Length: 325
Ligand code: SF4
Ligand code: MG
Image (cartoon, rainbow, N blue to C red):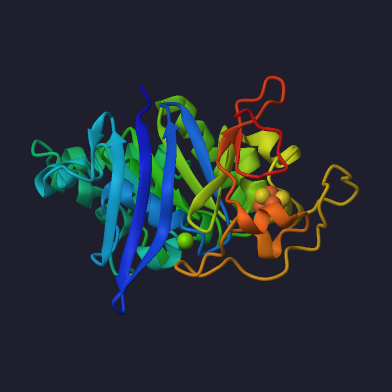
C-alpha cells in the first residue's frame, strides 16, 4: 500500500462570503522509496494540496476527500493524533530556509527541539548525539551544531532544514520549493542529497517546484497541476521529455536547454497567468492560454484519463492527448 494516498481531495477557501476552490478533486499516491514531484506555476494549488498532508491548511479552508498517511486519514483524525503524526511520521521542509531558522539560536539546539519534544525517552545527551548524526547524514560536519544560522551559506541552511525534517525519523517528507532560493550548483547538490536520502532511508518524498527541469532530475514521477487540478501525471522523464499536456509542454519549454530540439512548444514561456481560483473558465481550464485549443476545449472539460501510448503509465487531461476511455 502507498505511504501517502490522496483520494479525490478538494480544498475550498471561504473568503469574503465566497467559496473559492483552490484544489479540485486530486487523486495521487506516493510509495516508500519514491519521490513524487508536483509541478505548476504559483497559484495552481500545489502548496494548498500538500498542506493537507500535515493538516496545515489555513483555518478558512475546508478539505474533502481522503488524505491517507500509512493508511490513516489525516482529515478526520483527532488533533492529538495529528500532533503525533507531525515530525514522527510525516514532516515538511519549508520554502526559504533563510527565514525559517531562528537567527539567535545555535542550529544544533533547533534540530534537537523536535527530538526532545516528540521522544519522551530522549535526553539532552542523546538528542545531541542524534543531531551530530543528522548533520553528517546531510553532509555537514557534526561540529556545525554550534554554528548560528548567519554563519552558514544558503545551501548549508537548507541542509539543516532537511536534517530537522528527518530528526524524528519520518517515513514521509514534503518539501515545498526547497531549492528555489539557491543558486543552480547548490540547488543540484541539495536535490542530489534529497534523492539519496529517499533511496537510503526508504522515505516517501513529495517535492514541490515550479521548475519542471528540477523535478525531472530529482523525481521518479511528476504530477503537473493547473488551476487546482492534476492535468498530467507519469514517470518524470516521460512527462518532461514528451509531455502529453500542452501545459506540461509549456513548463518544460519554459526552461529550455540550448540545442535541445525535443520541445514541441514555444520555449519563450507561456503568455498570461493561471486563473484565480473561483474564476476558472468553462471547458478546459487551460484553454485561454493553450496554443492548441480547439472549439471543443471551450465547451467540454477534459477528464484525466490513462494514455494509450505503449508502456505508458501516464494520465493526462487534454482532448488532444491519445487517451483510453
Ligand atoms: Fe489545450 Fe484543449 Fe488540451 Fe485544454 S483540452 S490543454 S485547451 S488542447
Ligand atoms: Mg507555493
